[in-house]
Image (cartoon, rainbow, N blue to C red; front, side):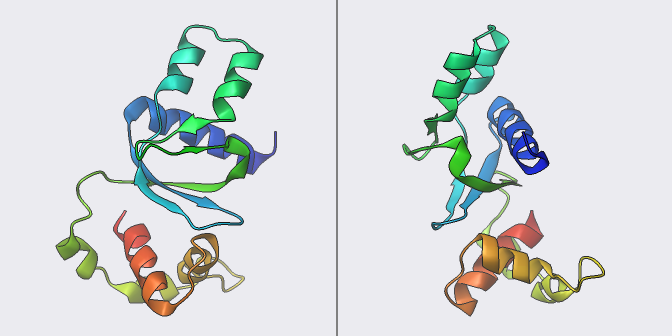
Length: 135
């Protein structure tokens, strides 16, 4: 298991245990925003489910919005504070912080959000950047 996959699995498990709201991004499709994971995986692992059962659960992860996804399709899982991202709080976010380089390469949070959330225009980019900065 690669490090990114391991990190996603650990985040999935922790967020399913705590019912933490998340934004889920995918390499080849639009993100799913402000959902929680089913506790099914946590329950299965707590009761000693075998590899086959865990693999089955990861192939059809249930989300609070009624949809299901495959673990292998997930690019990033971004934990979000449930109920605290009000319109007022989001409007007050200083978007300029997203333009600061996060490392020596010059990569910015804005660029990461643009790429991972598949933003088609600057309005959508600002919307998701606000969410990430506010979280």
